[in-house]
Structures are given as structure tokens and as C-alpha cells.
Image (cartoon, rainbow, N blue to C red):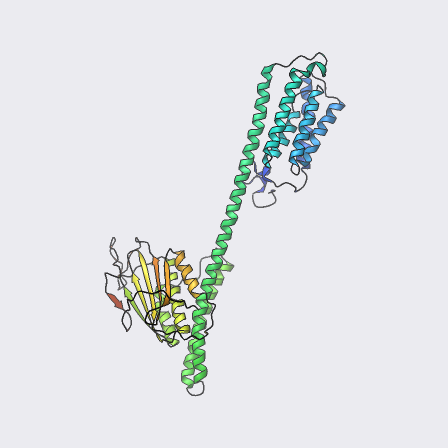
Length: 445
């Protein structure tokens, strides 16, 4: 790419960055003019130091111009250019003109061909030029100018071979670097696309979970308010108050999600929700007519923010599904703190109402995406007794410090007890259901 694209100018990425320019984006007038001027002036000086060769006359300068002119097309048609420049260079040497800067024309043409992937053409051109030079210097010198020229010593072929190898090595180096840069650019672009996709999915999950839960509560309370508006205005007022509180909370969480889009580099204004806000979910569910019992198994732990957020959203979505799809007005939430995982279980007695409660149908998909992002799993479906269960297992790093049930920190090195080893602590009425989940159809908001 040219220096005008991106920051840092044409030298960003290394001294060979200019060789990465794409072909066909304009003729290289400036570089070709500089090369032509250097070859013309340099060949004049070379002729003074090679008295056994012809002086640079008008024909010699015309041949040099003919050799330099094709370089204008070296990015568009590298193969014809490299062979044309090689032929003109051979004719220049056959006419008896001095060795020297004329080989710069061949070097530039071969360089352009190799960098653009035409390695065989460059190798053939250099091979033919070298073979032609051998024929001129060791066999045809008797018949070509200058008069009285003798055979060239075989020792001079060593620097010629070195020149050829140097051209090919430099060209291959730039070609390899160009391919590496192209691969790095493709990887960066793919990584940016992945990050954008992940961020878009994260936003979609957050908005879905926030809106689905809050709107479900609002929908239920709106129905209650409408039904009791005439017969029980006091209860209708309570329903409207619940609607106001739920909508205010939903607007706050939506604003927090959208703020990250406007200023992705800024820290969030409010902490991400976690399991410490579980009582709020219970209260909101109660306002929608759902009685939620919570139980804790094992010793509470301070979980990473990502795990806390995923667990909160999974419980939120599961309770939203109960409000929307279940005929039961009770639900049980069990938090199992194990040494290496958080075990979540949300149960309701069912059965499913079968009514169309709205929603996008992406609730369970969002829960699975959240669990999968942490390396966990989700099972959801009907229980053998007709109820519905959401069971999530979210891995937790074992080195996280633990918290006792009373909220105090555990001693260093103290290993939290798994749910199977610790009696269940109930935070609400009811009993814990330990039935294993069975394969069953999914419900989703």
C-alpha cells in the first residue's frame, strides 16, 4: 500500500515497505526518471575508466533510454519488461559500450518481477543475460566492436555471478517480507472482524436479557393494572409503580450497554451485574407474581466478573422463561459453589402454558453462548415430573479467594467445599430438588 494509506508514511513496517505497493496504481515516473538519470551519468563516468570499450555516444544513450523506458510498466507487466530490458542490455554490451550502471536496469526489472511473484521469468532473464555475456566475452568478441578487443578473463565471471546472486537474493528477501506483511494484515483484519462479531453478539445478548426480563415484568404488571383499574385502584397503582421501577432499571442497563458503543475505550459507569443482585431478581419476579426460593450449596466465593455476569444473566433469563411460559407460580434457584465450578440450577413445577408470550426465541441460545464463552455447559428442558429445569455449570479458577456464608473471607489456602460435601443452605421456603435433568424440548424467550 502507498504511504498515503495508514499512519507512519511509506516507511512504516520496515525499509522495504515501498516494495509492497500494489501494481497498477499509477506509473512509477519519479523512480524511473531517477534510475534513468543515474544510468546515463554513471555510464559516462564508466566509459572514461574503460578505455578499451567504446565511448558513450548518441547510439549508446539511445540504447540506455530504450532499456529504461520499459521500467515504467514494471508493476503492470513485469514479465515482458524484464525480458525487454535484458535484451536491450545485451545489445548495449554487444555494441561495445562500457560495463557498469547499465546492469542497474536489469536489477530493477528482475526485482519487480520477483517481488510480484514471477520468479521464473526473472531467473530466465538473468540466466540468458549471463549466457549472452559469456558468448560475447569469450567467442564473439572478434566480430564485434571495439576493434582489437581481446577475450575477457574467466576470472571476471566470478563478480558477474555474485551480481546475479545478489539480485536474486535481495528480490527473494523482499518477496518473502511482502508475503509476511500480507499475511499479518490478513490476520489483523480477521482478528478485528472476530472482535467485532464477538462484541456484537455480546451486545445482542445483553440487550436481549435486559429487555426480555424487564418487559416480561412490565407486561404482567400492565395486565394486572388493566384488570384491576376499576375494581381495585390501589392494586392497580402498585402495578403501575412496579412498571415504573422495572422500566427505569431497564433503561439504565440499556444505557450502560449503549455507552460502550459510543466510547469503547472508557470504563463502564456502573459495575456489571453479578450474583449480589440476585435479591433484585427475586423481588422483580415477585412483582410479576412469581415466588422464587433460593438455596446456596457450598461456600460462597468471589467469582471473576465475567462469571458473575454470566451467572446473573442465566438466572435472569431462566426466571423470565418461567414468567412467560410456565403455568407454575413458583421457582427454585440453587447456587452450588464447588472448588472448580459454579453449579446453577433453576427449576419450576410447570407445566408449560403453550401460550405465545412473545420474545425472540434466542434466550437459551444466549445462555449457551455465555456458558460456552467460559468453557461451561447448559442443559435445559422438561423434567420427568413435568416441570422445567435449566442447569448450568460454569468453571471457576480454583485460586479465587473464597467467602464464607456470612460474607467474611476464608483463610488462605482454604479449599471451598463442593455442593455434594456441604449441606444445602436455603434462602427461602421449600425444598431442594436433586433430580437429574433429562433430555427434553427447549423453551426460550
